[in-house]
Image (cartoon, rainbow, N blue to C red):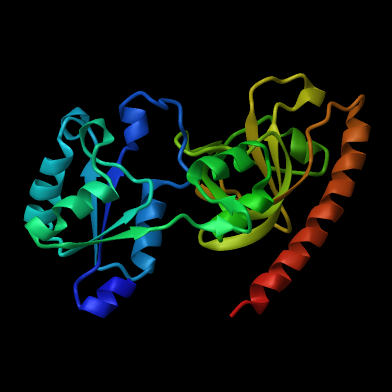
Length: 279
């Protein structure tokens, strides 16, 4: 945006879908940190003039770096100032990078700038680092890296209704299969239903007290009584409060959930206060 404002040129973000690492088989099981729709919305909110999504397939993967530069960036997009990340590569065999762009810039009459790595204190930020944090359940640190609470969209589905029977009704959520789910545990967070955000106590786990094995995502939405089956919702995670535990009785589980609710409400009370004080 700074370059666009300085030069008077339109700003354009070029991205791929799906992720090249998945298509090329390097990381076939890799999950995203946000849906493509959310990614597009986030980019547009930054004031970008154009968003170009290149369908990443075998044909694009086989295109040489020089062809990508000349045919797509220069001929199709008419780029005059190219900005590239310090470790971003493009073209067959990942030959395209800042150095290659610099080499051809004078001949092909464009300028190029490199975006240096971003650090959070001594940590160099990367999507791999954030994925590790989320997988470990460290959503609080992940939020600092992302500058937002990590969230997972999904659809409310029917469950065993055990939560309702023990006084903690939950929305059982079928999460988007392409999005990374945080590690097993109990979390404080928010559930967005029809555009409204509600404080929630969230569980990701196998319900070991009841002998189940499949990992489920459930949200105990505070002060909420509506029927939302089949509705699309989004769950944001603010902080993990404990690991999953197999209790010796349902009574012990209920006692722990009561303590969990107190902890979660206190955490979210502070979180909401901090959010409201931001400019």
